[in-house]
Image 1 (cartoon, rainbow, N blue to C red):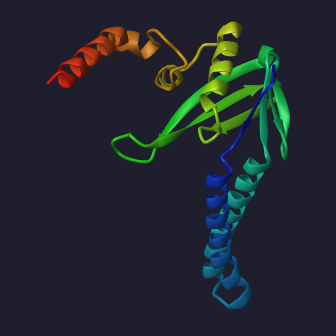
Image 2 (cartoon, one colour):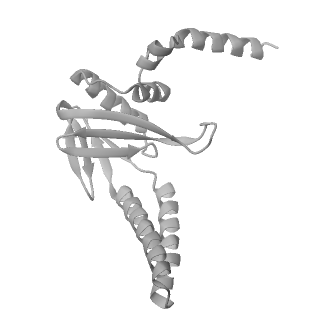
Image 3 (cartoon, rainbow, N blue to C red):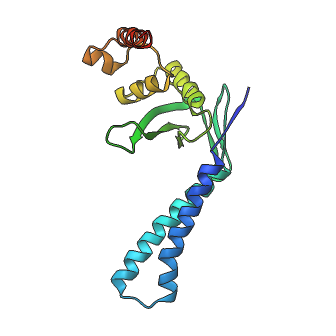
Length: 189
């Protein structure tokens, strides 16, 4: 069965507005005001960054991700597909927006069939796609980086000890049961 995943259009719409505004405040002065070449380079560089950001946001809004038992495909601009049987790399990275690492987003990178796909956690049902990719990586016998294993565990995709758990001597089941005991004690008072 083919599953379809989409990016949240309301969040992307906000990014489009921000990108368009940034593009306007960098490109309009270039067009309307004579300026020194140094300022021209600075405004032009910033304008190029805003243009790329806006283009990628628009591209993401148009893309539909499809996954089934044979692989994952992108429908829309820059489309293509990766067969699970040709998956070479799975990487799941977490990017924190705060020092305490409580807020941030994840990025799933899949490589295979001569292509590289990157999916951000703003994709609806991101966890399901990550789960399918992890199953395919396991079936192919791919070795995952310790950070990817930990991120898959945090996402709820992997269960059991990861390489870092073993290296650091962590027993997650013991820690979870201790947390449950602490929660039970705290709620009974």
